[in-house]
Length: 88
Image (cartoon, rainbow, N blue to C red):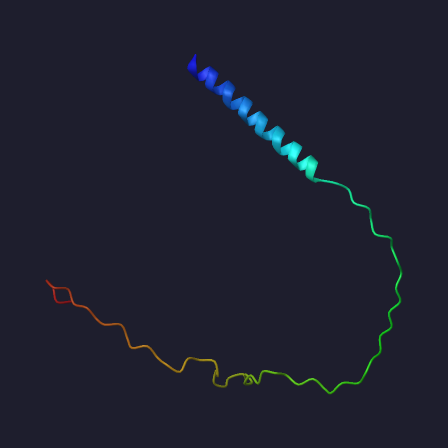
């Protein structure tokens, strides 16, 4: 019997929470008048600009040539371990 009462209380509390959210959402939403549309005329002028130069000077990649992006530091080889009993 106790669980039935608990379920009813939970259902009422949940319904009240949903109702409160709907009421708050509806009360905060309002329609505002749209601003009157006005037409504006804009004019643009074009000027000749200096030619654009690239900001990055990346090295060229040649087919079959060296890779300029390869790392300059090479890691040492992994250490070899021996098994304590067999020595392998």
